[in-house]
Length: 158
Image (tube, rainbow, N blue to C red; front, side):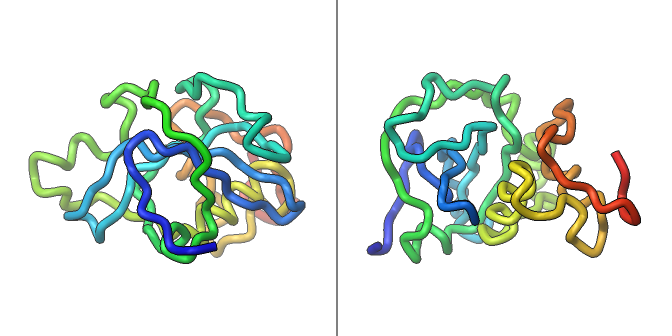
């Protein structure tokens, strides 16, 4: 798939290891932060774009992160629709860092987000990272660990 330049509102599919897809949406662009995008990722796993339930709202959001653009550049995250985001600015990451030039904000790699989404749907171990609670930190504030998450008994716990 050719390189894509995503825009605010773009809904995209992230291919999972079971050949299904997780659903994401571009909420904003942040050129100052490694030319990253603010993306929301939802608790939707679909076979195709036709199965996406709209609107995509905070209640179904798993994570909202500044994410690198490389998966879009490689054409791995497939843009399928463009709809106005329904996520409030207050729910976007690191708003407390904006007034200090985003110092302290983190940009997450697209491959890490893909692994995180696989773990959310039980396709990879939730505790596979060096810090077994790493994926817990990627969840939207107040969101509990997904019920499908597989936790290795010697790691992290619930």
